[in-house]
Image 1 (cartoon, rainbow, N blue to C red):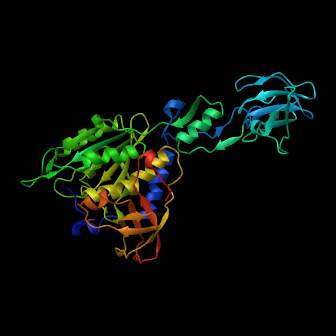
Image 2 (image 1 turned 60 degrees about the horizontal axis):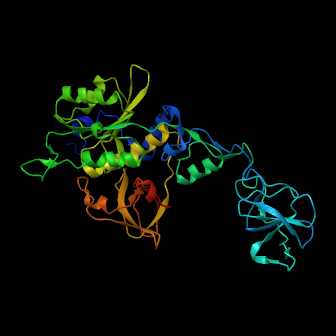
Image 3 (image 1 turned 90 degrees about the horizontal axis):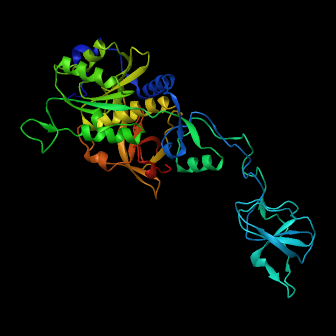
Length: 420
């Protein structure tokens, strides 16, 4: 399992780590350049995808004048003689004579010749069976195109599809949408010291990332099957090469855990070399998570796949996910670069010298403040389990109470998404 110490023998010859913000921008750009194919999906299957073209309406919205109340569609001055009914889902006959009316339901098409709609609660019947009352001055119906005109672009490409957008698309007359194919992801767990069941002991530790990372990836919109999670992969170069080559045959993104440094059983870098990969980012000036990396591999079919090397320490691995994987995936599906919201620190957060510090915090949404959590060692997950995201403390600074700082939110399930 990797640590975050730079070996002295390599620190002089290795290229300097990328700045954290620079690394995010770099991986987003390569993701966008390799954006996934556009596919057509029926509305029932598009939740969680990303629009590949703007959403436009096929007709005016509404497509015809519709009553906004239950009541009477009248022509001319009252009282009026009822001559029929206008119900939703039908085309009513026109009102051709002054002094006539039809009973009308909310959402029904307003008949041609109508001059006003009288609310049912503001109407009365005369002894002669006529309808009487005073219509309000403002029209009680929605005009065609009031919400949108035919062909108008309502939502731009790159927008995540959610239930509200699906409903809007249906109201526009769309039966399917052009979206980016969802990314396929796989996970390779490295480390002979890892247990996959039972409590740790006798020099072996329980694998926490094999069960957790696929769940994080799904929250970022990836498709990850149980068979896409492989490991622990034996700590040999041959096993690493074979496992990564196999995973790249079906996955757009392969995440690996551990092996990102250059220890005696850290085989990720030689594996990437054997597969002809080139580095997009190789180490990032961030704590925790320094030895993270992202590489790309061009297959025989010409399609680019990506390998995200996550450090073996669990919290560092999640820092790598939010730092490199999240912007990469945004690019692959054609979404804008994630914009980080800001929070107000309620307590001090130390800086990490020349490195960016991603500090786990929980949010007090009532007060609008962020509080650092405990148990945040690189190998710990207890703090992560109670946190809402990472406060970004930029290089050469520290966080003081009252400071407004960026925060990297942890990915949530769609129904849990909230405004920061």
